[in-house]
Image (cartoon, rainbow, N blue to C red):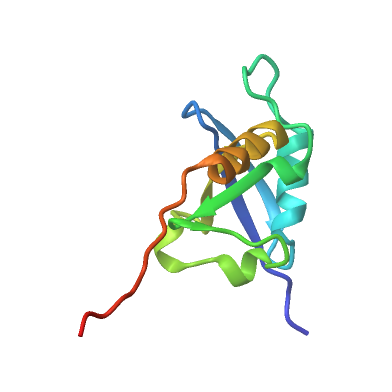
Amino acid sequence: MREEEFVDVKFRLFDGSDMGPFQFSSASTIDMLKQRVVSDWPKGKTVIPKAASEIKLISAGKVLENTKTIGQCKMPFSDVGGGGIIMHVVVQSSLGKKRAEKKLDDSPRKVVCACSVL
């Protein structure tokens, strides 16, 4: 029987500070990691996520999907010595998301006409 693989994950926050490293099973989902970030969020930060849905985790330049496991997301060039991974944490509150969506909805629209002249 194969022994379960564990990975050290360090979370890099928006201000350059780090959380961790924490040890996770390679079968842990990205959603589980997000929940850990919310529960262990450092006190005194200006931006504080209220839920895992307000967080995006980025590794090797890719936004990680909630349903993927660490084992599925682990890429050799994102590894840190000793089998660890650094994931960048982006916090976007639901209020910020609504504002961004509203901006897109309120933007002027261009009408493009594909006409041919005979």
